Length: 176
Length: 131
Image (cartoon, rainbow over all chains, first blue to last red; front, side):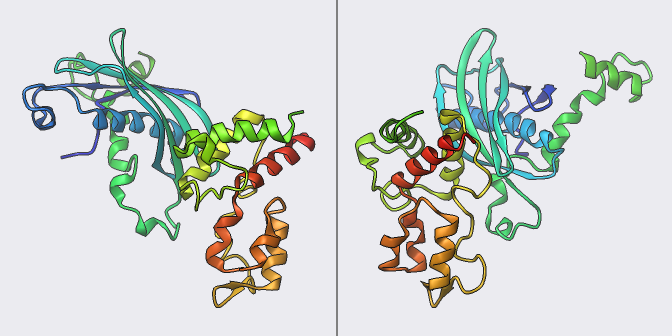
């Protein structure tokens, strides 16, 4: 299983905001196992997707020179839940950043319904940090594998008859 | 300019929020780590909140120096902070109560220098200097 809790990265305004979406589907095991008989997206995984959205926003600010680690969630409120078929939209706003890390606020909505809100604190670590080895890599907000989520749009819309990735296709994706 | 009492009230709110402590636990003499249960990660959260609340800029390591014990040679010997070390601590943490610490200068007690009172004095000095 891949630890990617956003399906598509939709928008990034450098140093300001980011938006990603997560489609909730019954095909995912955790929906069945979380509350048997009441399939909803687990709140913890929603938070993970919110952190990934905010973490990429912060990481991008420094061109991914630092490893961004989820340090603390000072505030999180769940107002509702998300069910199969819903598209969760994660909107992250950068509240603060400094050399040691940064804070984002993220909302999760389905349509016009507010599902969750959180404030998340991240710390920066560098590859050569002596403390790096002692940290469980599961706590990393993103690794280069997650960064692949930024490339999703590059598969194009499927309208290109040749089915090839051309510069034109990717620039269209960027603008949309 | 806020008085120390006003600063204390706001800091109590910030710490109660950041550390999940009751405001009445956040007395002036409370230590952040020992009494209020702060972890290293919380220091960053506290710095963010102090900057926002008081409109000040806090440089990295200015309020909560990292790796104090490991810093420089001669700071500590056999787990006890030396005279040199105490002088260095006074320099690095001008608002901490080093005199009280000097009575039992164990390296393990360094974290007790981070008190609510230290934060109040730090913020007051920052505001006075207009930084």
